[in-house]
Image 1 (tube, rainbow, N blue to C red):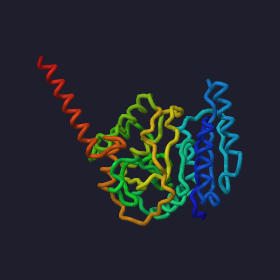
Image 2: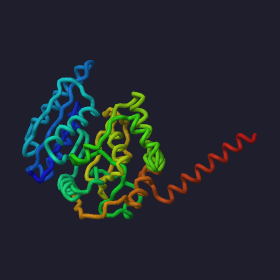
Image 3: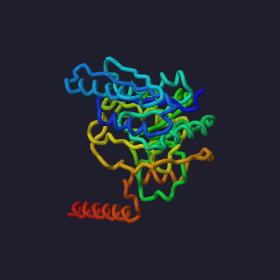
Length: 315
């Protein structure tokens, strides 16, 4: 069996993002030994001419050069949507292979991305509790806290990898997932990263039809199986699509990072990292500047606000 996991890339109608993603991927030495599957979503029934031209341009770019040793292109004649595309595409690849590396059209990777992902997939292949490998990590004021890599129940999907045995445990029934999360030992509060990130609201939005996503289902599946995600201490991938061109995001630079050129792994005990959990919660609670001074400023501001409210009510 080829020791390099197949790569699945999901594209739609963003030519500039797609090119940047492919060019970054091509700078990984391992592309010379890798199989790349490109899944091209099709136009919506009401697609404008500009949308159709963008879809055509994306399909031209993926054929522009041999981005990996072998490239297989899967084109849909109609629009599946990202959630269905990923669910069906990942399942299709894992029906034939034991492991997979997954990218979307707006994920820029470092030259050490493929080496790290393949090494992690090999190291933890027999660890049932490890269900997901992440390549992204946000920046906070506490980088010195982290080991070379750490485990946490939350997953991040901006450049990721998994195995067939893990993906087979994914569940896609949002109401049942939410019900089981509420009954779980840590409940919704634990699933929402101790109240710092509203993952449960994403599930409820899918139930209500306000969103159509896939990642929160996978996150919930991992959480309910007591699974873990492996995070690097420095990001090896980032999302370049936070520019208001995506389906479920608005323009922001809150997630921008400097990519590490490479990162090596060693086997470590499979258990949630206390420091890693603190790091992620600090990011979601305070943002990039999670320093003590900022936290004190925020607490002081909150106290002043509460005092002002009490004074107004007392009048």
